[in-house]
Amino acid sequence: MNEIRAIVSDIKKGNIMPIYFLMGEEPYYIDKISDFIEENMLDEAEKGFNQQVMYGRDTTIEDIVSSAKRYPMMAERQVLIVKEAQELSRNIEKLVAYAENPQLTTVLVLNYKYKKLDKRKKLYKAISKSGLIFDSKKLYENQVSDWIRRVLSGRKYKIEPKASQMLVEFLGSDLSKISNELDKLVLILPEDTIINDKHIEENIGISKDFNNFELRKAVGEKNLVKANRIINYFSENSKNNPLVMTISLLNNFFTQLLLFHGLQDKSKSAVAKSLGVSPYFIDEYFLAARNYPMRKVAQVIATLRDADIKSKGVGASLSHKDILKELLFKILH
Image (cartoon, rainbow, N blue to C red; front, top):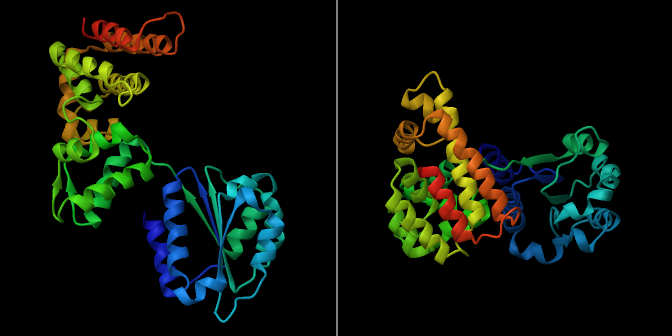
């Protein structure tokens, strides 16, 4: 986030690079920087003649270089944005000659999603000298809740930990999807709202009572009745509650419990840091650790692996409902 702010700040100050190579696993930040340049580098009168968007699958390196070498018309600079530039990965090194001597009146933006340049190759070294390379790194799931909080804070909203966790469990670490859902909430709710699980349920459609977060909590508490109600709901709404996600999240939970049992420092702050979870949820781990000794945790992890195999149709022809019921019985008994 700080690196993105620095890039935007430099552009606003007029410290503009001839090449912006935006690469990496997280497309959200690549799009944000590219969109900012597309919307703000030129004024509306200049864009018609001096701004061009190309797509990697529909162009070649030679076409890009040819366009980049043109001079702007009645403007200080031209902007050339290449979206989906990763489609040119086989020939991307052909940009070396241009990168070594770029047209200073052109701003060339390459959106190179899900891939990275090899730092040992000439192109990386050339762009590092003449332009800017931004590596957009994917957030781990345990970092996404904090990202949601920061984004909403910047827009004068707050969010409760459970509501944030619901978004993460439903949408994973896909920042673009999460951002779209946050946009919906911001449109509907007034500023200074503290977003809670009810807001998420009413406006995004994630049940506040029947979700993987609540299932994990029920399993940790060994609350058989509540856990059974949730898996019955999952079975009736399997499209929005895929079995593979439930197994994955339970596996993460019990893997964290295994780590918990091995910790020497079991103060709440140390456990939260070691497990990578919010302090808000840490009491659930202490309770679950009492209900599941280390040996039982190891057995549960083996059971989850077996359920994962069965869910893929290997060694059994059970329905997802039956797999869930069998899994829950083995965990809680």
